[in-house]
Amino acid sequence: MAPHAGIFFQGDRLTFVAITGRKSLECFSVETGENAGALLKAELDARRLRCRRVRIALERSLVTVKVLELPPVVGGSRQQMLRFEVERHVPFVADDALFDSADLPTTRDGPLRVLIAAGERKLLDRALRLLVESKLKATSFTPACHDLARLLGRGVKARRAVWAHRSGSAVDLVFLAGGELHLSRSVAVEDGEALAAEVNASLRLLRWTACDAVWISGDEAPALLGSSALATLGAPVSTPPYTSAASALVAQLPADQPGVGLLALATAVGRRRPILNLLPEGMRPFLVTPAQVATLVMVIATAGLGVASVALEGHRDRRYVRDLDAAARALEPEVQTVQQTASELSQKKRLLAAIATAEDRALRALPLMRELAEILPADAWLSTLNVDAKSLELTGQASTASQLIPLLEISPWLERVEFTSPVTRGRDKEQFRIKAAWEATASGPPPAITPERPPTGRPPAPPRPRAPGAGPGTDRPPGKGS
Image (cartoon, rainbow, N blue to C red; front, side, top):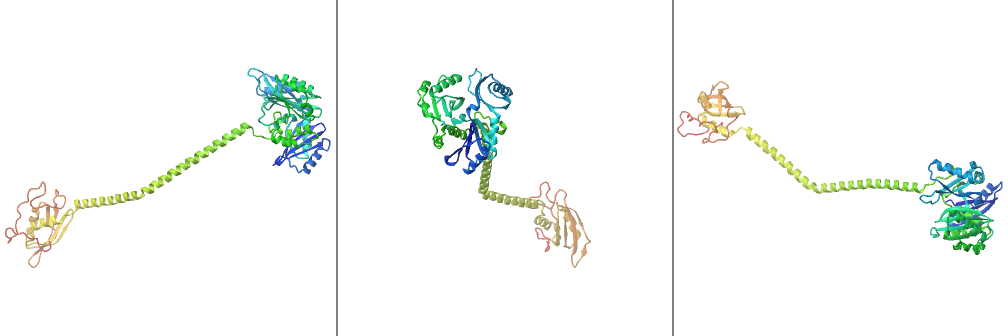
């Protein structure tokens, strides 16, 4: 992991601070002469510091910081008005100025209060030239004292605090409210009485009636802490309430220059997005804003919910299909039984239909033969009887074949009785072949009826003539061939 690094420019020297792994500190100073870039690279190589990005900070005296009151404006008008105000307050050409602004708390009906910082572009150009040989890239360009608040804990209860930090002959005054920067000044004071006067003047500029705490740090801090003049501010005077991690880092700073070292340390641990960053927009690294993070989280959460919803729906569908498969497998024996029963029922229905059709269309041989036995004389013998749905054909022998025609005509079921071939004479019998059609109203062969019950709609058959030689009551079949 690359260390956090910061460079603080003061006069003709720069102080480099890098926070490496396990909270160890590297701190060194280099003269800002012609070979400053090479010296900086040599120090980094000697200490094996692989830094890629670095924060740059300036003395507070080189930057103009003002609180401006503006009418409510929006869009491009605000930037134009800020540039106009910068031209009024900076001692150099406004076209060469780098500036940034931050809004301060305002009342509902009051003017817009803006904290603005401006510095010369040539200061940034000089710093960037020193970074070329070391291949370092600047991430911010701020007054060093503005980053001192990063050394404080989030649990600092002071609502309004004044931090006085001495570095060399100048004292940087930083005014914090709720841990946020509201104003900074650079003053030249020698003792606590002059410092108290400057603090009171700044409080009036901020329209603060009092402050809750006064913190002293940097060079000759013990002398200022012991000054009775600061007690007139009506707030406790003490060293800054550093966090435990910051206290460990402060303890590693060189003891000969505590003021410069602390400002360089504050630069190294500064915010990723400083409140007032003089680095041009095009040179700032891309950083995700909290709003972008919230939007990204919402997008990811929405996408996750969508994927989870689809997955859950798919899981439900699969579970439903599994339940259906299980239910189908449980019902499979019953389904097979029902299918088998339906198959058997269908077969039986087809069998019954075939039987019914056969019964409707079948030729009832026994009633026919009984009818013929009653009609034909006793000396007639049948050798062949062919019956179909339209007619019947008789082949046989009889003493007198011609007598068979009127006998068969008497039958209520037969009509158009005729010989189909000439009658021939055998030894003692005549051989015949007779064909007869069914009566049109009979619709086929006679049903199974008894002599006592003729077919419905038919008159009783007339008495059947008996063959010659046959006595009364004689009743026998037509012969062997019947």
